[in-house]
Amino acid sequence: MTSTPDPNSKPDPSRPEAGKGEPEKAGWLARKRARPGAGEAVKAEPAPPPPRKKRKTGITALFSGLMTAAVFLLVAVFAGVTLAHREFSEPGPLQTDKVVIIERGSTTEDIVETLTREGVVTRPSLLWAVLLWRDISSKFSSEGANRRAKSGEYLFRQSASMSEVVDVITSGRSIQHAITIPEGLTSEQIVERLMQNELLTGEIESIPAEGALLPDTYRISRGTSREALIARMASEQRRVLNEIWSRRAKDIPLRNPRELVTLASIVEKETGRADERPRVASVFYNRLEKKMRLQSDPTIIYGLVGGKGSLGRPISRADIDRPTAYNTYTIPALPPGPIANPGRAAMEATANPSRTRDFYFVADGTGGHAFAETLEQHNRNVARWRQIESMRAAIPAAPGLQPVPGAPAAASADGATAPQVQGFSQPDRRPGQVTTPAPAGRPAGTPDPPAARAAPQPN
Image (cartoon, rainbow, N blue to C red; front, side, top):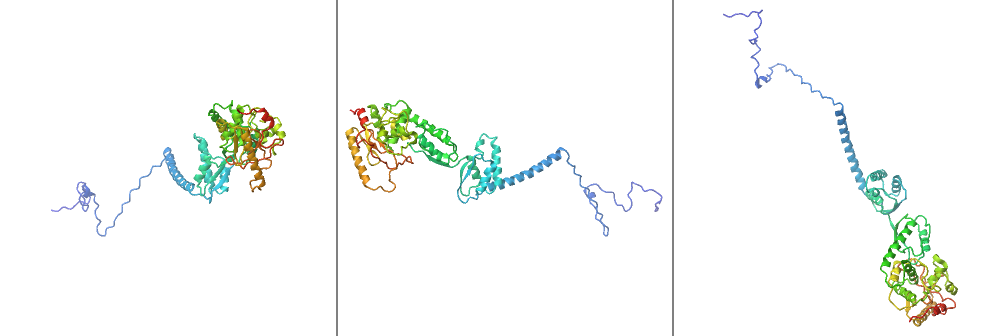
């Protein structure tokens, strides 16, 4: 018998409702979504909301911001350095080599302006930044002076890059100029030459002592002070003189280095030939040994005009007889000091003279001298020289070989007029010698009468 359900009765929870299907099964199959039936609408399920980000606060936020800024800064710096390095190393604008002077006391801005104006660089801002950085970093470096730009006269090569430009002006490799001081000049003449040289700066407070400077070729930078060059020449003279004095022949009759310079200055003024200097020195040593007067004309001139160097006219008989502290016709030995600044070769020759028995010498017409042991031989040499003079007087002098007006005459050891070399401008090349007539009252080819009577003849 079939029973009808009671409409008022409550459903039994333990029994499933009709049309509801079976209870949901556990497991993967149970979790599968059932397909919708035909004509049934698909119901979209809303997506779950994204998780909310926690906002950074305090130190964490600050650190994150700084890191981000640092990254951007590093990227910008790297890009800037790469670009600057490329421009720093690229060939510069110079079409040819160029010399530029950076004045003493110039600031970084002055240097940049000068190099830009001269067309050495085209990016002044980059050069300014590099020089400023090197200037700042030099204060914290043990080699600070080597990093800063320096004044001077610099040579910039064609297409020099900015890197090369900075290297040149910070290294201090300025252009070196040669100043040649010829042998045989007096200290006054040397000072006069230095004062006329436009490469040098400053004044010279006082004229150095005669013989205190070493004639030579000196390399200097533009702007070198004259006092600094004088000090350098004096220092070189002391050094060279000490070396030569230590190697001197032990039997020469000189008591100290000053006497060596004194005699060397006379040798320097008597001959310009290197091969003759030791022999000329031997003549003077032989005469000193025999108590004979040296009778050298350059000593007459120095006794009359001092450091001026030139008498401006031929030596007269009155000049020979006029007593002065330096006139070796009237004094029995060496003068009290040098009569010029001798070169190294003259000092070497005087310290180590030739071993001869010569007492006389006179010009031989070839730019050198004829030496003699006796007065008779010397007189023959003098007569030969006079013949050469006469022959030359009969032939017009070629252009460029004219005698120097007013050039003073030198003397042979016995007082006969001999050629004197003065006014040369190159230390390794001297002009042809110049002669003047014998002083009045002294026959050509004979010794000066007072000196001849006072000087004993050699044995």
